[in-house]
Figure 1 (cartoon, one colour):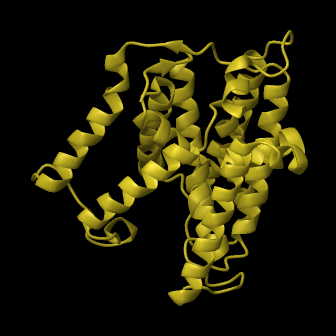
Figure 2 (cartoon, rainbow, N blue to C red):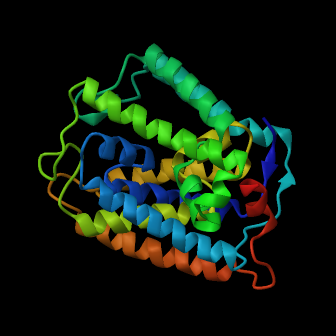
Figure 3 (cartoon, one colour):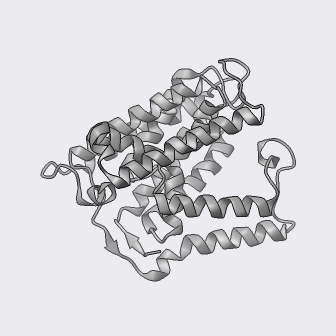
Length: 293
């Protein structure tokens, strides 16, 4: 736990919004993408290729000198803002006051008992914090160094082994629980908007590289005192609200017009950000290199 910041919090906030919009168009974050693939959903592969393409584009900008600021110490109080917010939300969840509406049907109502969810979250969070688990981070290392160099780096090897283990556990869990269904049709949380699934996850991969971490990684970093990740996390919460209120997310029918416009504008915005914040005098900025060593 350490209070750190690299600057540009407002920009990270907006990128956080774009991450969730991209996830909603694909109908899943990178973690959900893995679950869908491991459950036999062939359509999720379009999201995987889109994510990889977005990471590749982001790496090209990082290699060209993209940077958002130097890593500096920040006031300790900043590090407690997001954990304090989460604690307040937990109290509200357990208290269930009348001014809070909880879902009683649909995906929002489908969850494990609260205490089991808390235990699973604590275990998953601890493992993710210790291993630096990040789907886009693993793909980025492969693009930067190649399989041979990654294999020789203990940190990279551990990260990739974590991702591979996640794949295998999810795959066997799908088989053992009878939820594995290989095919294109009839898959839960999917549609036939393959191109938009590709572009949605491309935006997620691109944005994740620019702010150094996929949505899951941003949550973990925010919990360990990173103010930048905290700004991105708040952006993700805002993005989720916009998706629900503006109807941007994909559904069983396909991708709505509003979602298509949001993805195209979001990708254009990420390219603009990448160009504006590029320093041609450096290759890989120190703050990115520190996270890859």
